[in-house]
Length: 173
Image 1 (cartoon, rainbow, N blue to C red):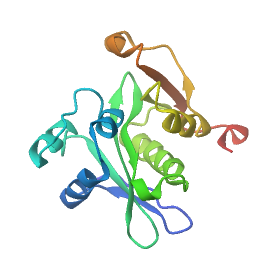
Image 2: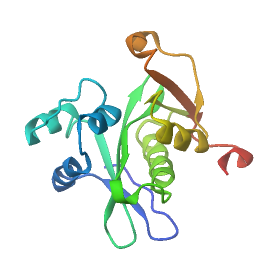
Image 3: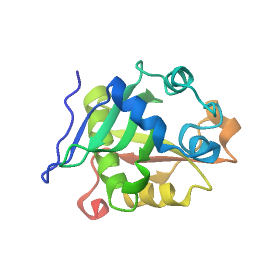
């Protein structure tokens, strides 16, 4: 079991459990939301079985960000990709967006990914038209990198972003 980070103000990133996946399904209102989060292969409308299958539950390391009151506010996954700790399927609960949840989730997943795979760099894909997510990732220190050949079919639709696990002090603000 990976040791997950806690934040100084009572927020916590913890491994997701089955009940979290059930709640997560309610965070998506339409096919566009699901596509932006899970990619074009993620089925919608989904069933509980197809949702679990498409998010690779429980074979992929999945995490929940909880606020100090114990409410689930964010979800994300981490796996190893091209010698990097790769972040995937990041989402904030709809009513928690715009409140710093994304930044906390990213930092928690970067830490959890490093604990799992120990690579000095992390990466993620983001759809080019997902301005909110792109802004959050850039604010967290991610920068555009050379697009991987094995995902070339997504080059026109996505950016491939990377950042060091440990940001220099000036870049971490």
